Length: 139
Image 1 (cartoon, rainbow, N blue to C red):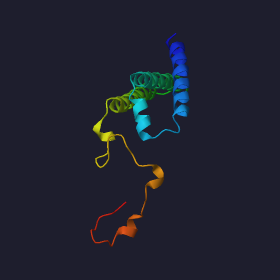
Image 2: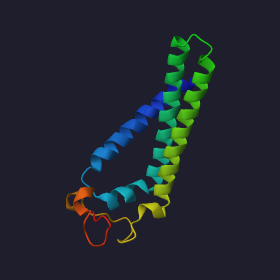
Image 3: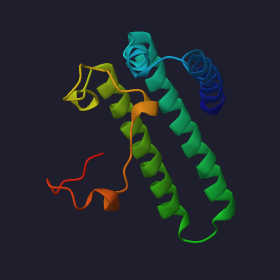
Image 4: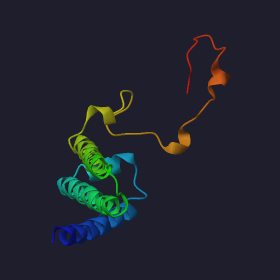
């Protein structure tokens, strides 16, 4: 019963996430952050992460139980559970940091949540800037 309910939740949350991403493809960095910082979006994103990694752990558990026939079965099951839990926690922490406006996401030289467009970023190969007076790389 738990597998079926988590699968139903995962399907609905995945449809919501896909529709949201498609709807936000043409917006900028600041608008994307504003969307992710919404309370409903944050809650649904956390639920999506929980459902996704729970479903992943259950699926990998079935594969290990079916195909691992040695004493390595228990350590493999434990490793899969711990990795799925760790990835879920990392995703939830990242989502909550975005939702509550972490300082890491704000640039020091620009206003909060503003980023330059991708087409204006210039890249110079490190070897092309080695003889300049300051001795530092300029990107």
